[in-house]
Image 1 (tube, protein in one colour):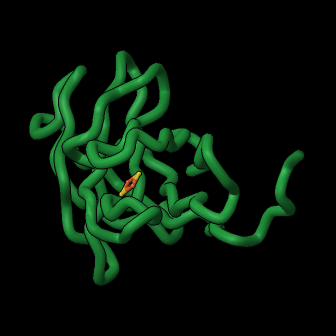
Image 2 (cartoon, helix red, strand yellow; image 1 turned 30 degrees about the horizontal axis):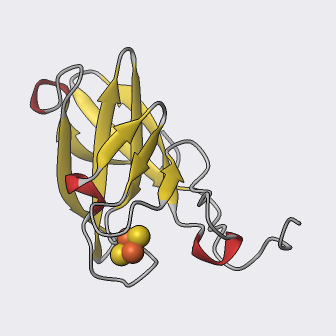
Length: 114
Ligand code: FES
């Protein structure tokens, strides 16, 4: 589990559940959708205030509770503009621990799609 950190117990995030944890100086939201776990930076990159943990699930995406921008839970991509792409994390399960590792940040690094 190179680079991974245990951040929660499997029992804390049952299927359909979500949990916000502290990680690497920030807040990260964990989601358990069917058989998969996802982790995304909790703070919405649009206004840097809204917590995505309070958002609405839309397939494998989360819609911000403030203005409804959607963030892909696998890639961090925002449906409105690449400038709002956000940080996601790889998730693995080790025993009864949920472990995450930061993936490369997308924000501001992709060319705008037309
Ligand atoms: S603060 Fe999240 S979409 Fe505006």
